[in-house]
Image 1 (cartoon, helix red, strand yellow):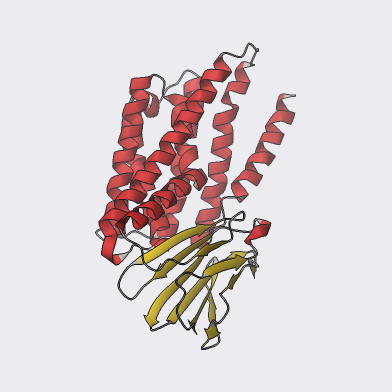
Image 2 (cartoon, helix red, strand yellow):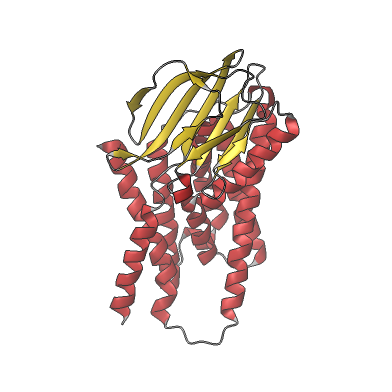
Length: 328
């Protein structure tokens, strides 16, 4: 029975890990003159084919030149220009194809005055209305929501936090550990986003996955009566690896970009959104732990290690996938 459960766990974990490979599609519109825009449309690849999502512009939009497309490591990128009398303000843009749950889409509109609008389109909301202008409050709202959605959709970061929670006990120790992780990734998020530090993205993503493997292994060792550094000084591990995870957050923010007229606001609210999403996840996990402890049931000793093994399997899968992506 133990072997059957472990086999099912490994199969489920592999399928779960596969879901983290894909990235959102990205649409960028840059205003280049009266009613004229440059379009950049980046669509993730699925194997050797691009995902079947298309931009649907409002009526009256005229394409000025054929799209010029190139394949990158994991996406297909097209560029062209369009013109629409009266511009796009007040008009609806739609992404066709995401209703089938293929991919989320990040949309960024950059105006000539330096202001911008950022939206995240989901399968249940495949369109949005272009605003005439966006002030500081609109920028703050958009980047706060992006921060929350990024952390809650960032399975690797959440698994790292969950692995820490498998080891750390006690409200004070959890608070100090989470604070150390938050401080560390805030430092590298700001440094990388503002260009003070530059690191290659693919190796960082592989190292982030490896950090999850390390903490998952520490959780297993602890259950075997051999607590490691994470159990003795979790804030040290959280801070050290938090610096690494901050580069991952910065990479996600780089995909969207920052509005030139409100960089501090966008950067601050994105980071706040990440923290709020992270705290919501921690609260949910602690509530689940509290409920499970109070359910009267017998749990075999070997079953207590299954969550740590599941996290480790998923993370190791990511390590191999990400190393292959930049090593090949």
